[in-house]
Length: 465
Ligand code: HEM
Image (cartoon, rainbow, N blue to C red; front, side, top):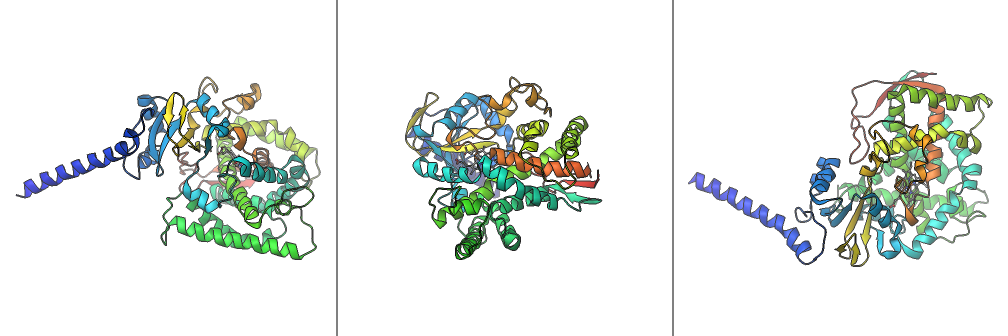
């Protein structure tokens, strides 16, 4: 009797699993003819778990079976994955043909409905214009770089003779550096209130949008409210006072540099978006550059020489300026090689705003398109010996202007903070390498999927140079 019950139970589970696995296929595929090959996984979850567990191998296996343009179901949506370089570029360049931003719901909810990352058309053009006006080359040269230099110099003081977790430090540095640039004078006063809330907000953007108490999503939503009210307070205080400010917030609130008329809600969402966009990208790139330089003494030597040469032309406490940044050719190459090899950004999300033909297939309205970038970074025809850390390759060929260079995106959403980001990382590395040497303590693991991270931190022993 027990045996019959067990066999019956197994059979029931088998039938249930098969029915559930067929459900997504029936639901999405049978009513949409002309889709690319691929599988849809489980209802609601699709193949998200497999993707997160197997990482890049998930993509490689799929490509081996279905080619570089296939269908799946991830993060709650039917999705087309594109791994083809030319196609990826086409998708990013053609928002006007209905390939609009398609970031996950949790991220958009938390960053705010006016976030530049999610809007398109004329609203996007307007908000992007406002953002570009506060991070223009003139703003960087006259306001942001001096602020950044002051902050970094003080942040990197007293690291001598310490074992530090460079992952934790680069994360903190990225957040505080952007806070200083956005809200300069008040940042000292508000940073202790904003920092813990920001970390909760960041976690929530990567979660499932479940609005129940205790979920990362709900906590992030609360944190967003706290951060928004702190920024509101600062805006109100500034309006009441006669004091002038030289930072991004002053530009967004409307001064000589910015001719945009933004609502407080738009200003707050832009501020939160800048903090979010620069945080993970800058901290992970800085951490991985420190690791790669540590592991490649020749590169470290050339890197240090470049920075010591700058210091030699200056008085001991003289800040670095725009011309110094321009002269950091090898540093720029190290940053690009780090972004490539660690693939700090694995992919970008778009969605179809109407039924459309793409790559010879019919893609229904509302499907997500995941523009997968990792494989292009390891393409041997572009980057010979792709798994090798070789910053010199960026000096030999003009790889930065190659059509397949999508590390900062492409089309009308191309990263507006590219140069500012490079400057932030260069400034941090400048003061690190001219003041200190470092050794890895050892034993820490670094993962580069789904995000670049050292699960237990990346510990280095620092001594003065
Ligand atoms: C190494 C550093 C950085 C990397 C690798 C990077 C990468 C990218 C990429 C790939 C995109 C395109 C997203 C898409 O197409 O959906 C993007 C967009 C964006 N980035 Fe960056 N970014 C960096 C630094 C920064 C910084 C410092 C800022 C701060 C101003 C910033 C602000 C933005 C914004 C606001 C967008 C959205 C632009 C739009 O929707 O028009 N990024 N970034």
